[in-house]
Image (cartoon, rainbow, N blue to C red; front, side, top):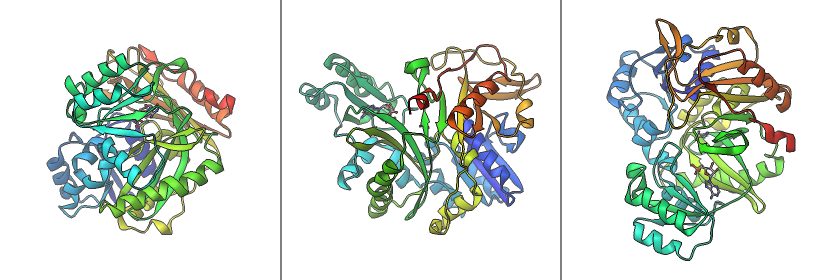
Length: 423
Ligand code: AMP
Ligand code: GLY
């Protein structure tokens, strides 16, 4: 069969690598893809938001299954557009992707269906939000309602910071129309865990857990980024935590969406905080995490095409997910200066070694194929991933492999997975 993947990051490279392992797949296309994806798929120069072009391409090439990796096209309705043309697509429709697309929607859903999350209020105007903050407890969390590249969340320690935050989100529209509404939320403390799942509208199957490192610098200092590294599984995600989440969070979320007339098909990513009072949902995403996919998918034993098709067909109850009894760590190699400003266009050396070593992966994010070879083309450049029997071994392997590749201004965190030493 022929598969089209929509997106261009490390997550889509990880998805493409899993798809390439399926004996059922003869040909993979990726729009727009990147240099690494280009080694296993034919990259086509169509942007993820060019719905008409994507649909026309999928029809012309008789694509059997399209997998949408990114949030923007999902929230914008790419799945609906393609389905309207009779195409098979893995991912939520627009009315279900709102689970990620509107934080106010997801908070109201959790409240209505008693799914544990931080206490909150939604606001449509800066005046009301400011008034509410006068009597609030600090620290407090402000969230722009819509998609903001993972940057629309502000943790404010004082009333003054919160006032400033409301101004930047709602008045100055720092995150554009994402800030037309805002959620003000209780500040939670604890360990963060990412849990990805496959959903077919009724049934949910949970993947192995992972943990991201969002800050740019060692010791969780510096600015928030798209993610500087991940490990899987999380030792903090115990069987007790899992049992609680299955009962009070996972299936209840799927049932709630179905009850609202918004059946969810695709991946739900649960961003959880393990608080002293138990697990709480910090956020939902309607897609695989990046760089969570880079440590979760290489450990999955199932044929990803079987699982995606079961989600589309509503037959996920007939599938059990299986994961290897090992661990994986992904260390992001970024360009110095990320996430603020950085240079691009430096040649990358040493990539070939990953083709020869079992259990090692170099997922491309911001890379580009040029006449000079593969060069850096973004803030996050590569996701170097390694497996190991234990998290410690996977971590040592991943850091060793970060030395195999080189480019000017290469920058990484040195403490990805360090938390496991405390587990
Ligand atoms: P989100 O995009 O909602 O996942 O938020 C981004 C990050 O902000 C999360 O990964 C947490 O580190 C932090 N965060 C979000 N909500 C809260 C909260 N209620 N309490 C503490 N930290 C939070
Ligand atoms: N790693 C966080 C995300 O994909 O949103």
